[in-house]
Length: 306
Image (tube, rainbow, N blue to C red):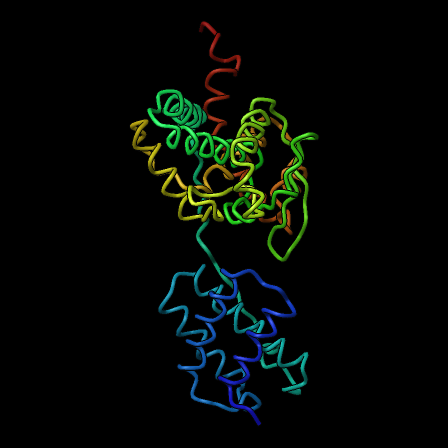
């Protein structure tokens, strides 16, 4: 009979080879399950009871914010589903546990559209005024990256993992492999975006072919999400923008802007690659914030003379 740590090691291997989970999810599982194995007093998984799990869950709630605790519990729950599937345990102790969360609603942070315009204009001006070919090429790549982030609402991890064959600039379609290897296609609807992507591809053709990824760094290797973050910080500073901008905020801005333009939320769900409409619905709370502007400027009561 293997002990808990050995079973966890086998489970993580299973997640890598069979479930094909992405690197970030695997890392989170490793952290959460190592913590669980170190803090639970029972080594034999068969002897871990609902009571033991409830005590551990209670400690998690005391130590972490609801969102973090929820993730850690989900990691352990997935482990026990694996034990049940592999018939390592006869009965899953989680079946007797009812977990409810009251998470505070954290609204997604968006970028005001005039700031997005300023941000993009800064990249193009930097490219135009660049003194060296090296600076011009990098600015071209930077413009292509940000334009695609905003044009498609793509996740930063999805953008960095794009292969050359995933980007069809003739038809303006990007093939995206999202969470859980779910595939979706996004149409690029703006000719200026397609133009800058074509220019980037022509300029970086050799590096793209060698690397087999669409976006590359100055060394001709895969562009990392850290590099994109540094890039955003650079142009935020150059544009004297006070707002702290992250790659994911372009995704939030993409979704919220479409919702405010009366696009059906189910279309937005599909474009974002959300598995559930409940995830997408958080953007409705952001869109509601625009009501004040609409009702202040559009409601006919403002024209009454009483």
